[in-house]
Length: 469
Image 1 (tube, rainbow, N blue to C red):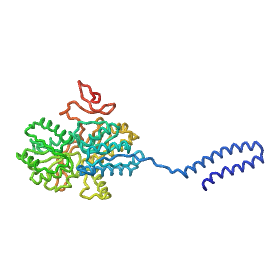
Image 2 (tube, one colour):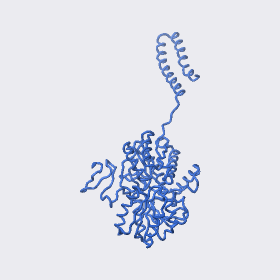
Image 3 (tube, rainbow, N blue to C red):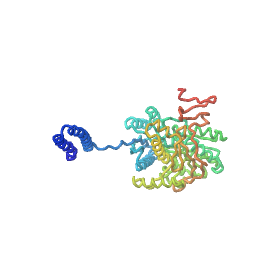
Image 4 (cartoon, rainbow, N blue to C red):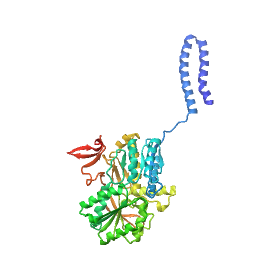
């Protein structure tokens, strides 16, 4: 009220002065005073309005930018997906500490689809429609990704998917940061068949019974055949999610490898890797008599096992915690600090390949939004084309056309401490190929410059799959 009186006082004082002036100097002076009164009154009213507004209406900051986190925190996949949530939250905190995105804080909305593929779709719809998130970081298995895909395409959402997969997909609404077949599986086979990898000639393919292992192995069988491996030199077997009894299968593997020229390609997912590797050790299968190379088994899963009997077995990834470079050292240090703050036990505070992708794709999204100047999905997707960031593996970028990412490939050997020694690596980063020439010759994907996604080359011209429907 005191501020209100101060604003009104100039009006009252002026009218007192102008009344005195009109009597002393006549009509001409009165007219001039009246003009001045109008100006002074207007100024006083503006002041009064500002006082009232500042007294009653607080200044409001811009609303935060919401993003979704869609990883299983319970169920069979929690062992692998739980740590991804942690590094996503860590990346968001780092971004917010530097002022956020477009001057706004980033707010995570966390959902637990509980390793239930149908629930993934329900949670995805909630995030897009109800929470109105600008992007979602999530999914692990291909069945969960395929469950949510129609939701993202229907609502024009944006999903960042962090895990290696079978390819044969190229959605406008997904950025695939994990490895394609040519960035993980085929280099693994090349290594095993090389003199350095033991010159293996026979392969036992074991995996979880869903789309990723089956499609990957379909392509690998064709790849092995192209390398001279016969049908007799291959075996293939699948188990359901959360399978626990591997005694019979490991017995078959032991017999298969008895000749000394066999190896196992492992696409088991989730917590079933634990009993599988325990049974390998129980039956005396070692890296010397039957090496196993894994595509979904890394540092996180190794922390749950007695690692010593597994030393020497292999994995194929785009990242290992043991990589020696400044970016990785910095990231590991930051994550250890995060673990301490969050009360995560030191033994569980390890990093692995899917965690690296999950962390890096948050930084990709943030940089793309800044570049686009908006969170609009179509404009962010355009900004992501050929976008490059630094990561724990060094330079890392989104392909200019196909929504997948370039990265190096490493073959690692399990150490007794649960880490990996890199025994082979590509000379540089590898361009992603979502469609294999072995299964779909001439098929590729292009979303840039008016591109319509997946196409086949027919008589030297692109035929878009979207126009065939």
